[in-house]
Each structure stands twice: as structure tokens, then as C-alpha cells.
Image (cartoon, rainbow, N blue to C red; front, side, top):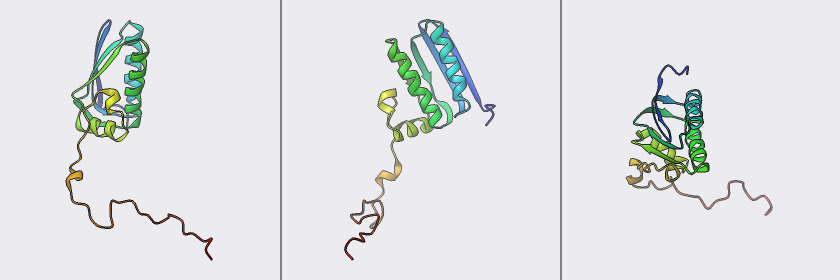
Length: 135
């Protein structure tokens, strides 16, 4: 990934900053957002609004940058709002349990409404390693 599928729109009006990424938000492109956030903080911004409706992919590095921004704004009594997160953003934030921290509405999973198949999707009471002590 070279970042060519990623774009940032940034509006800085201290103490507010609005950032709208679009495209793939991954380990490479998360650095671009981090640089913009650092510049906005240096300019006096403490209230951030992120519009994530056009993010088509996010990985752990992307979520890590969101958590980093939350920590930075929290440290200066600022705010962070994640607006209109795309489905992939909602899903990953829900999977890693940061949806409440970031104010992202949790994702719903279509698979949760399927009936459970016997022998699948349950916790076994059998040990993972056979007990060889009774021998």
C-alpha cells in the first residue's frame, strides 16, 4: 500500500479541527493522520471531529491512531467525536472493544441471528491436552 488510495481533508480553526479521511486507513496511511493531528495540536486544537464515512478499510494501526488521538485530547481536556463511521470502522472498533471509548455505535452482526449448529460455536468441557496422569 503506497497511500495512493487515501486522502485527508483537514480544517483547522483552533481550538477545533475537523478531519475527513477517505480510502484505506492502514499502517501506512495512519502516519499521515498522526502528522495532521500533531500539527493541529501544535496549532492549539483540542477538539477533534473525525468524519469516517468514506473510509473503505481500517486495520489495527488505524484504530491505534484513533485511540492515540483520544488519549491526546483527553490529556488536554479536549474532545474527540467520530462521526458517521463506515461499516468497516464500526466493525473493527467493536471487535477490539473501543467503540464506547471512541463514541462509535457498535456494529451488529448478521451471523448472531443464525441458529446455533450442534457441535459448533460452543465451549467444550473437554481439556485441550489429554490428561496423561491417570495411567
